[in-house]
Length: 123
Image (tube, rainbow, N blue to C red; front, side):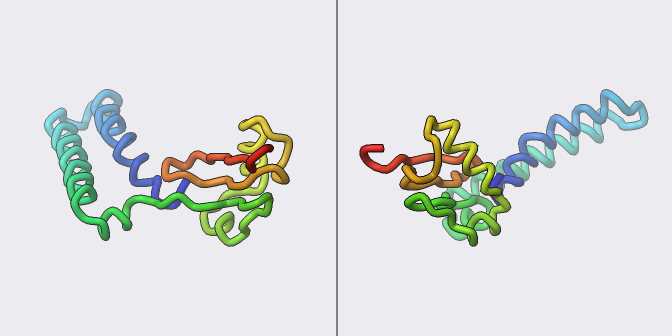
């Protein structure tokens, strides 16, 4: 997962969690739960609206794609910064149908946390 993908997870999970609270706890009023849901939904709307209009704000909440491997060589600084293991990169390479990193031009960490594998030309 990317460093900033946490925001996307929060806005996906939080509304469901808020509604689950009213189902499992009798002492939580429906009005309180509805207010929490509206607050979360409104906040999410405000953040996405602002991100669509401000490049600087978008940079704070959205990650950029980052290379993890280039020309068969891992990039340790990026792996460390994004907390990605060598095993995960190698698993992505195998999942893409390649035996190992020696025939790979690029492995990118995408903004959604997935890994894209680009083979070398002719590989």
